[in-house]
Figure 1: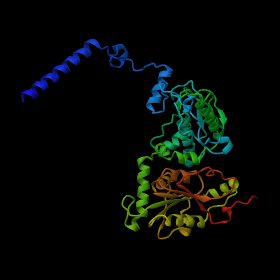
Figure 2: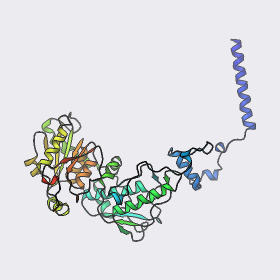
Figure 3: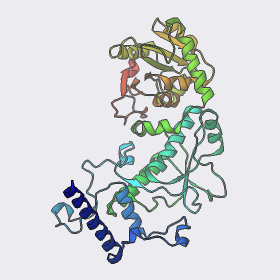
Length: 408
């Protein structure tokens, strides 16, 4: 016991001597020094550009070349290596590729001297949602300033509680924006980002990519880009509580005959959207396509019946009478609602989805989870889903002569 006490005393004495040595003789490093009070009161630190880049590299865990290690052949060129599978330019492919490993620092929204982008606000709810999401993706992918116009913001704000993109105000969005199509603007930004990537030693771009303000005059809705960013789209459109409450109630009313509710059931729900009243002339004029008939929906039902156990199909439509006469069955129920936003909320609550043509149908399914079916067509005039290559997106035969396009 005495020996143990002696060893303990000796260890404590040596520790105390080491502490005194550190305090008296070693110079403290910069990171342990106290900052002057006037510096600590300043909430903004001015860092050199090089230091900022280094901090961003460390923060994002991006690879950094070791300056002291011997250089290998792969390290001869400090620039990032080219993409293994170079993506075609948007204007050449008609698709919307993106550089997933590239990060662009967003231009501050309050930097009123920087160019900005606005988008066409025409169309109904589905159009406006597509246009808003397309605009938001420009900021997300390329860091540009964006702004919505008054009518679009007002319409979306009625149904969704998190429409955060700033409304265009003369004070901070100055000058006349140049008209451009979404594809041309996306192509311009994509090229600028790809070029900037070759001129930097990291995958983080600080310099703005836009030098002119633009107004997108068409109706963008890049389905391939939306599906690649489905989780992000979910965060953009959160239904207001009243809309979601009514949508759940509409589903519960339909499930009474099954002695079930939306939250208490033992079967999957597949939501179905059928658009008819205003689409016959629209589809014929723009794409030379006829209305979807009973065969397409029957084929879509069978697609899910082969893959799911006892699915129940809930149909929302602007023509519930046609749906009851042609689609309703023991496992197909029609929900009659007069509020389009509630129909879209019902769509989003499905475990899987059957869509028709149009932005409303696609956005309702996109806001949900699970798989999406879409009419199969080879018509070159209908290009909206040509670039979609997603494991959750399935093309189901229309079951009529327009499945295979014949030029007229």
